[in-house]
Length: 377
Length: 152
Image (cartoon, rainbow over all chains, first blue to last red; front, side, top):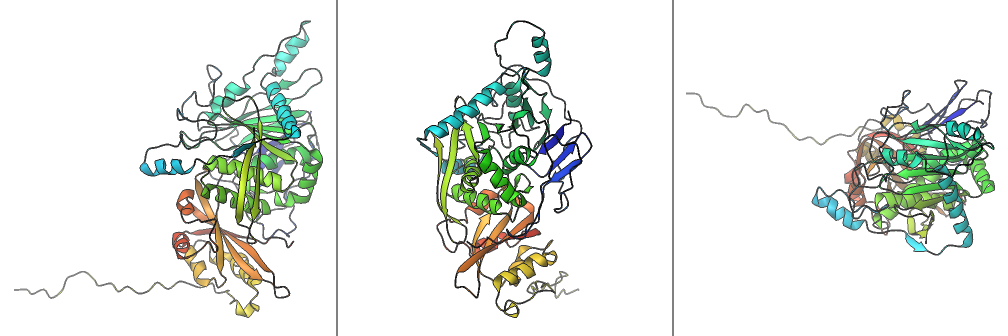
């Protein structure tokens, strides 16, 4: 089966997408002039396409000096034991989830003052049955992901008469290992097969991106967000992660793909879940000209960039940590634009994913007047 | 005996720095006070004049009023910023409704997000003044974008 390699720039820059046929598709920098501009950045390809995809018509690809995809992934030594992302160092002993109030590096007085200012957290609220259903569904897929056998193990088991009880695989230990340092992102794909689903080999990237081979039966993705600063949790899914999920699911018709997970430095795990494929399709088709990305963020000059920045500024000003402001701003863009995608977070040591939402109102000039980030109980 | 009547240090006069102006610059009034057209023409379409120069060159030309600013965020490193978004008011003649556009300016260098956050007051309107201008004026412009919201 032909594969389409979609590069998901998880934190930075472009998405070169390369197929077995040598097709390179760049999804990236856009020079947006206004929202009304007609721009077509995203390639029209299918998840199982065999024909070369058309090149994008947007601006020349931006290639950051330090973030090119490495043709030869760095070698690594497997971690000795499964553990959390802090086990290999880099996390403050008091770090918990996305809190940075106690985990900020305190080498200077200024940083101590900053950390005391960043104690605002999303409020925990009761959520409806439907929200809980989505959370459980994402948690179920996540659990399956962490217990999938490899393809070789599936073949081995198919030759044996007995059934095997699910066992934890190396997905979480590996990703925790890669989230614990600042060297490279890593990830896996969940491949559905009627004869036995399996987990892909580990995909290694750079400090800011990792590429995934996607097939029509790819069920889910998972990757790590490495440490940026010692003692501070890494943020959850970036705008690029969101765009990458939609591009694969809708743009490339990977019809089974509904979940993209992030194991972040600091111990939190996030899920970006397509909870309404109809809404996601409508959003993607109506906005694909606005869904270019740049350095992991939405493209400058796009509506989503402005919304994301405005909310992040507002929340930072209200005392939220960089990570919490990032996550809540991401939830704001997803909710406000009725994207059909939900952001959920599982704190370190917890078992459940909790949907995150941010409601806000804007002034006429686009600044945020007020906002309330929440997380389901 | 040698009498020295002066030092050998050359005396410098502090002439005021003359900021260069965009040779293609069109004044607001020459564009019928159409602020949207003015900003789009001078700072987006002719941005090549401002790139590589400090932001004060642009500020020196800008006739439109900045009412607010947004600190550009980065995903990695998350505590840094690589630009600023300036909100500018414009009014369409056929309507009395006030509209806003964003002049998004990216810099060559990164700066600490929290340094600019100290100057950011989400409750203030306008949220821009001399302190903010002084903070940003020496950053070197890398690229300029414009965002014009759709009218509702």
